[in-house]
Image 1: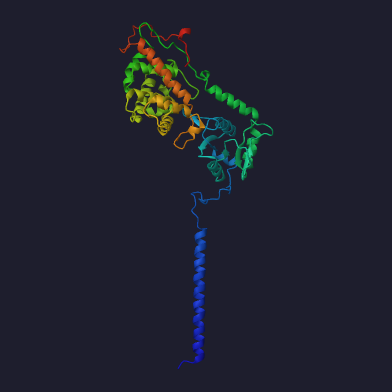
Image 2 (image 1 turned 90 degrees about the vertical axis):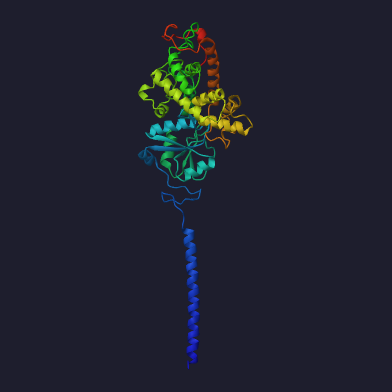
Length: 409
């Protein structure tokens, strides 16, 4: 027989055991919940992936930037900020940043952001060093640099507030006169004065139908691009005025103004960039490549105008214009209906459209380029036959343009 007091004691022990078991379970559940709350996904650099946008990470100091050899700017696409022009970065803000990077002795990298929110968040996360847009208000965690009291023309870049060495350097470097200087240089870049070339007559001998001393090369290589050799001649005159030594300020070389980077892709040696035949041959290969990319345009002559536009303004920009034309109910396979949207890519209402992937372009240059080649081709067809070149068709030596032959390039 079990004593009564023993039963009471056992009952008490069981109750205590149950109580402590429940207590332990609660503790384990709370610990698990806390661990789940604390566990965060980290980036490869060990920082939380979803960091509070108001939290500014440790910025690269000026010494870090110089040791790393690279300044990273965060900006938006636009004519006053940054855009690509024949493979070169352009835009007032970009050109200023380029000068600043040169004073630091580092290279410049551009990160184009979707909008100002994206731009500010990326600076706070340490993904860039300088916000290269004009900031006109105080923002938490960001110091505005370059702003001179009472000077509306000053720049106003943004730097992380915890990066005083970089901010102080920008403030000491920037002078309001520098902004005017950069804007003037930018305007000069687009003038024909920055293109080094001789201007030859648009036709060597109109009586005998000789366009240039390179007619035999145009006739030989035009079939590669599947175009009339006289059209290729008209394009060449627009590019270089038949000067094989022509060089543009962006670095385009030779008769057909081929960029060195493009030459690399086409298998053209940089040592041959200024040689007439290799230069023309490479240009027609490039045009053939563009023609293949535009095969959705069924009519050959129409496709040729698009090829010329891509040669000048870039394939992706032309595709952006075609997307805009389609959105607005136009025929994307007719140059006359797409050209207006190439022009509109200078307008923020269009180059900021979500369907535009490559942003701002100087569309007026491209439309004018195609139109001038069409006009000159019409002139050449009326004076030059389609037969092969003969050295008996007058002097093979290029002649300087007479006044009556000069016209705007």
